[in-house]
Amino acid sequence: MNAIPKFALPDREKHYRYFRCHLARLSPNAEWLCRMLASWSVGLGALPDRLGLEAADFHGLQQEFFHSLEIPAIAPSRRQVDFSRMLERDDLIRYLQTRSAYPERAETGWVTSLLVVGCLGDDHLWQDLGLWSRQDLSELIDYNFPQVAAANTGDMKWKKFLYKQLCDAEGIYVCRAPSCEVCVDYPRCFGPEN
Image (cartoon, one colour):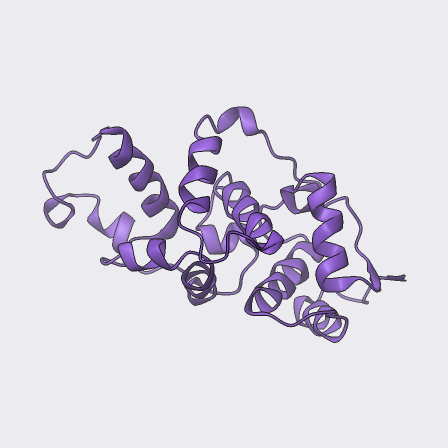
């Protein structure tokens, strides 16, 4: 197996090209995984050790997409994840799994786990995952969870949208206004992401 090279400068683009050259299988998810791994390799995003995946899932992802590479399990950023902060973890996993376009594929489980771990970060979900734009995240969700993508008719920020879906399912309404359009926090939920 090839070890990931240490480039002179932490250059996400170089890492991205390196991962793309070593793809064992092409799929739409491969593109987004290359971007996440490139960001993760230079300490960007909020994904911790093994990208936040269980050891077997991390190994499975590596074998499926990058079998000739030895991807280190330790996050260069040294970030750790504390799932005790996320009481709704199982609910979020269930929400995504029941709306998956490809429930039989292992990669769907990995993508689900990555999205859930990304929700623990402090920035926009696309940034916490190490994706390069909100468009990347929207395309990833549309491909893997088209029902979820279709339900976000107002283009709400993804992390807020996912949590709102959980709250709505439980009948928990914490919003201060009867509808989003009249809420004072509207720009925080629907405004541009940068």
